[in-house]
Image 1 (tube, rainbow, N blue to C red):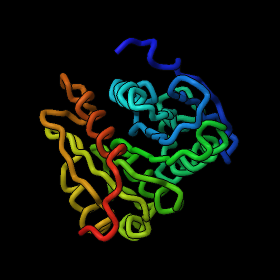
Image 2: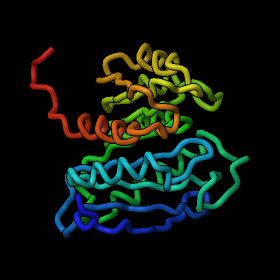
Image 3: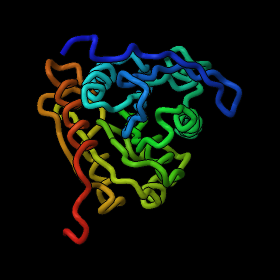
Image 4: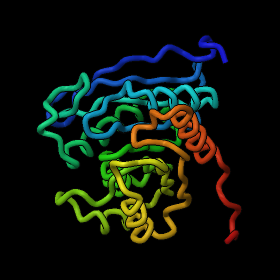
Length: 232
């Protein structure tokens, strides 16, 4: 598919509740019509908004007319303010919360069904924010960590999430064991609607074809129709 199919990613900068700059990119389908679905992607600890797997997800979803927002957490390794040594789940959750408020103010995205996806360390972040915000349409837990923080009771937090959760594992992940996802499944119960695995994928989805497979799995889950009423 030609590059002309997509609008150029629009850079933006906002100020979070702590007075720090958050720098990001908004990839939206061409045109001026409202966008039905939006995915906000969160990189992991030490990552940034330009990770190859994030760019692949954006390209794949844009082809399906889904808007994608990528941004650098404050106290991260990207362009936003702060130093990586100050990173915390709570601080990143505040960033995501403020970013979601920004997304809701965008005219084309105001009525969009907004999903959030977190890779690695940011898995905890999207669960925390999903518990805070009943307007979240879906959560994607991507090769992610669930219970490696003392800042939150993650089990209680996960039980407060209303949105459906899709877990996508990296089959050859040497950094985050599958037991992290297993724990989320146990505590979140039927909020977990899918537990998928990308064959041969390493933690950062750098293995050939793995980022594309990840993006395709997210697309299929995001665009799947809801279960029929009364179905088991």
